[in-house]
Image 1: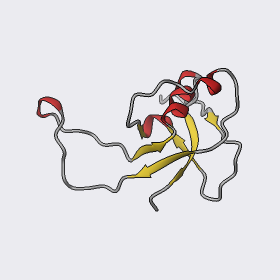
Image 2: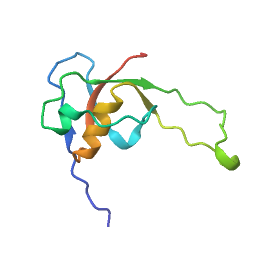
Image 3: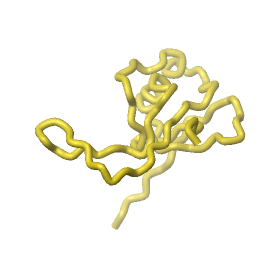
Length: 101
């Protein structure tokens, strides 16, 4: 039987007409940032993260040792530290906007 996972969303204070909720596990973090200190210390997320939507391609990229690289659908343009803080705080989802539509 499949176990239901409770969704815990880090919501942004600022409203945006295109804001949506992203599953953190589906985001590619471009750089290895430290978690945003202010969020870890209990401050509220002000702005949603900015996300790039990757269109599916038939071209398979190869990673280390010739293993096919599995690309995620989204990558973070701005907000890596916010995502790292959300993960550290136990969030499963975060609010963001797609910037390349």
